[in-house]
Image (cartoon, rainbow, N blue to C red; front, side):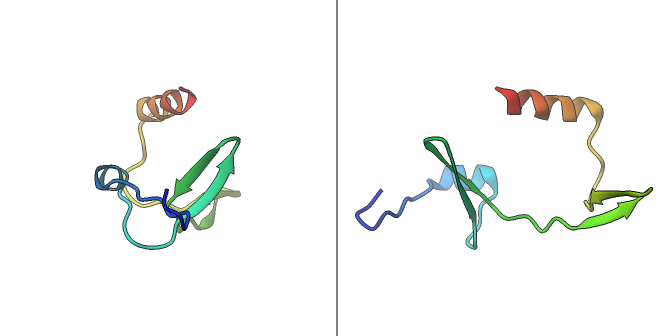
Length: 73
């Protein structure tokens, strides 16, 4: 961190996460800082429920399980 409080995210990490120049969301979690690219999620009503509209193919059950397992580590 420099004297002005700026932090540089290394190129390899930015590329891995798909970060590009633009706004980011920053939050504090305990003693950590979380940086996320804002999403353009929009809600739609489907079968009487609000769901986040997405594009592309739906995730398989196995993919969802793997994402949940990785998030719990």
